[in-house]
Image: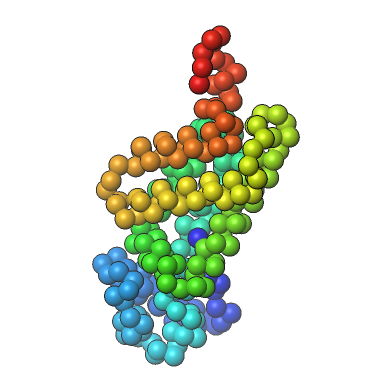
Length: 217
């Protein structure tokens, strides 16, 4: 979920060309799958040459990655809320996933295009995997701290578990991006519960602490 690096060209005219290409791509993706859009379609719409396209982007996939930058920012914000937000852990996860889902659904056409690009473009796939590792790092650090404090039980490798939890988010987002009118609350509820149980091995440490005698999770 990491966007491609922007071009080094910073001239006003260069920026206008780049933005025109991105606007053309965004517009076409609202009605047309990525595989059915050609570079020629984009250059004609933007009013620039084919060589100019490849000056800014090495592929359609790279251009899609730039469009997804706002979603990437929201994904990082979601992780920050989960590991460092206020309140109990379960509500933090639920709140973070809700906001992230809102952002992805606002850009579902772009998210779908990036999923297509990831499956066929090695560089996009590598960038996506690196983005997942970056987002998983603070989750793993949080988990290690919770284990050290005794709040969370020891278990599988923290880094591997954190990557797996980011995978859960991606699975939910992919499902909703391809079914934007489908029910989202059941998916978000299950994803939240998986986060809580994966880290704490029980529904919620705060709930456990206040549970009545004899009550089981």
